[in-house]
Image 1 (spheres, rainbow, N blue to C red):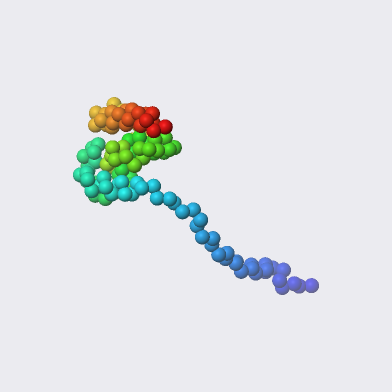
Image 2: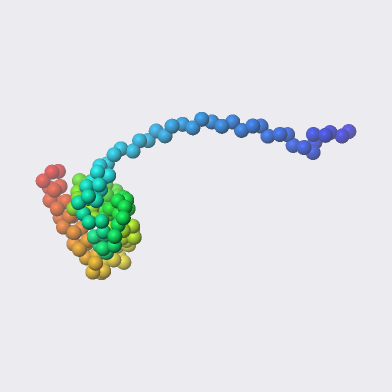
Length: 129
């Protein structure tokens, strides 16, 4: 006996789309944007390390001398002295390639500033535990 449906598969059921749930996490403002804006207005629009011209005030162009990652120096996260204008490549080198720039003369002032800020941070922590 011949069954016509045997060679043709059953049609796929129509896919039902579920409604998307709204995104619940709301990022809390850190205050960095305001500090970056103030620095952009106060300082010349060029890299403080290499002197290259910076045309836009993007977050990648603001380097934290003392890292803000891992919340190691939370009180100095918004300190203007701790933020330097630089290019995206300089930002990457400062965050990820310190061994390659340690002996470079144009970076020496950054390492000296870092030591000064660490000493200042330690003093700050002693005064305000």
